[in-house]
Image (cartoon, rainbow, N blue to C red; front, side, top):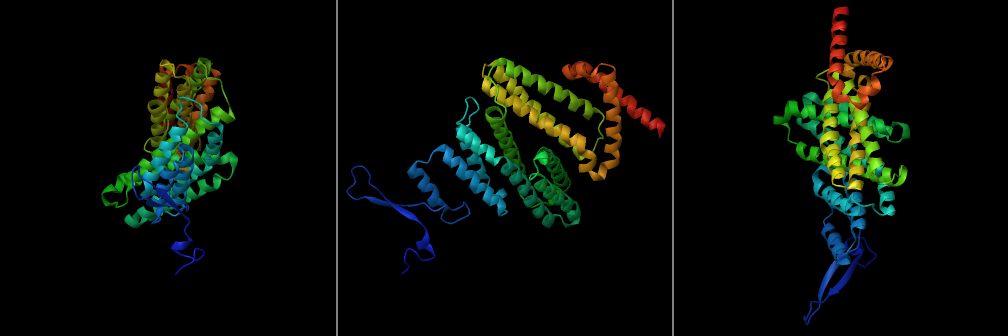
Length: 367
């Protein structure tokens, strides 16, 4: 017989809870584990039973689910445990619903997870890429290049000045993976749709956490109409700049597709909902959503600015584009038109398109 201090089953810490049913003559013993095991462990069900009996709060469950999921990703099992991530998100929204300010202690915990969220996204991308190499050996070199980019981004996370670049490049990496999947979907056995769903969830988690940390700790702002109007104006200016850059960008590149997707997310998923919340006098939610809308646009601008480095297969096209863009922007500044364009994109959009056409035509004639 094993003693309690021996290795094996007896080493698990358990609590015997005597749960007596009302009116029952005999108490029913329920074994509840207090050991910290992950979802891939055979005794994980005991841990969850223990949580229910101890009535663990949403905040503690949020922390526990995130820790579990991050460890699963470290072991290359993240794609198979989407349910755990979804439970984390459910608890996160219960703790930080967006309509009211969450407890500062919870926001500080979220702040401590910001790098971890991005790191999990990168490792999930690598997990999928390793699987795609098995399914598509003929494109293994292309996939290896993506894996190298992922490793570079992981290194950037350790340098404060490069973290925004890492987040932006992650969106470009996602587009490169999608491109491989589009070309070879019929032959892929990996659960790519589950990966994309998980990545979308994590991208939203990253935005939510950044918003709460930003408006609560980093740059606290009053929850008033003026704050929303100022942020909405910031969104409009950044949207106009990204659109002006995008008009002349080289088509059929990963960067252009990634940027267009980010612009769509910024407008449809966040900005439009922010305006609706504002009109419904839900100021804190409106402020959070307009903050969220700005984040994808920042990533989009960074992709355009660094595309010649991050898309080496299109370096020549991107370098030509950058030169023309710098010329065009300088001309607009000297003409005194740039500020008007930022404030009234719809009014000046066709004019910018025409200016780009002239530059592209002039370049063709010059060559």
